[in-house]
Image (cartoon, rainbow, N blue to C red; front, side, top):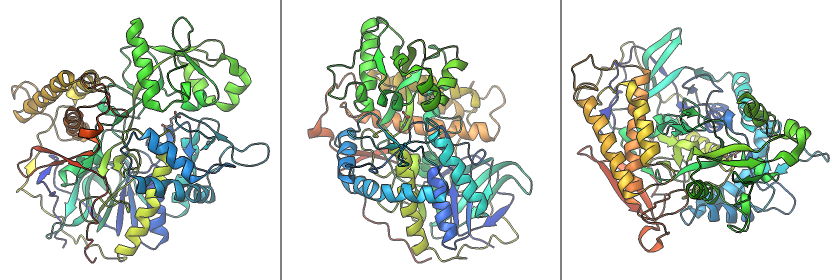
Length: 578
Ligand code: SIN
């Protein structure tokens, strides 16, 4: 029987029943976007028994929503060095240059390997990959597919490859907590599966290597481009497991999200930067282009600059949105180049062929996440992270457009190489016939009533959104604390009614509350404006005081500990012999 226990580095874990079933693998990959499936396919190809655990269906994560594409120095005259320069500028002084160098030099090869896996990118008449531009790029270097359906195609290719490879997958599975062995090292994960036959309810995958590729946390805000599954589960699990997270205050707000009204909540339709890359203009209600003169790249300035310019114009004019004008594309170009966006606009009663469409910034991407080194190792031995859940140091204070799919690919390959050299096939402890008992020594988090999810989102959008200040963040922190306290006291009304039940919605809400609290603490501590972190009370970048990363972890007394570091990379964690 295994000695694995569902306890974590901090002793804190979600309030879930003990696992009722268990399976064994060499590697468990949590998440099935570009990062997760790439890591899993490479590990499996190297002979490691690999299991992919994913929250919904295999193609339901953020990857399939990516419109613009994947950036890599693939075009004539472009070089990794130029891609590096653009990435460093967007990152506003906080990129880890070594990580960016790995991204841009390994990127073109990783994209070619993705093509070998089956992904089909749009080509020009000459048959070369057609490349477009997006904000912050001085070159045409964004490969796209199906016009504006890049993520759908990448997801299709990887899911098909996973099926062809016979990769073992568990769908509709919410990961709960990290399992550790008697020596405190990673031994797998606990998870909750809904309706998957023999594996149903809470169970465990025992494995000496766990890769987090759970995607983002956009659902912590009221309006986001992220799908419903993006509830920060990976970051919250990692924190409970004792890992460090970094740069969480740097939430990227995409400048051009279709504006559906101030009350519109949840996932909102994205209007890709590629639309501006092809020449669309941002205008106010009077039709005036307001990006001219603000930046040499005008509408193609880095994303934070465009988002701030939109917010400023909205504030000056008392408007709740601006407009994107691409009528000059004509119907044919809209239909061929941007079919997804055209359909989304028309579904909401707007026609970009004949009218400027309303847009406003919305939460889009977490530039920070679980802190990793260049091999994707987190600060917890045996736990790796890649994709949006990770903070590799590539994005700094602001991700360059279309660098995220590339980061997922490159760092997933690096992780697979590292795991392959560190894990011996068949080295997981067998689960045996009995399942491990629940650890009672730790602290079970209070069950959170899923009804407070909307409150958390409103608190975050109001206090920790595009515009932040000490006052707004302090108010948000206090409101989040109150939500936590009420849950700890036995429910939204202090225990007078039945407390929340254990279940997916409550665990997700718990994860959202956790990442909201950490994000707010980091945003409060960073008293400057940099990249996508905009403090109204500290409007300037302050290199003397803040040219460093903020690292957060849960301290032994269970409080949040915020520390500073020059680099996101850290001294390599010694991976013990497997
Ligand atoms: C977009 O198409 O504008 C989004 C691309 C990205 O977030 O990198």
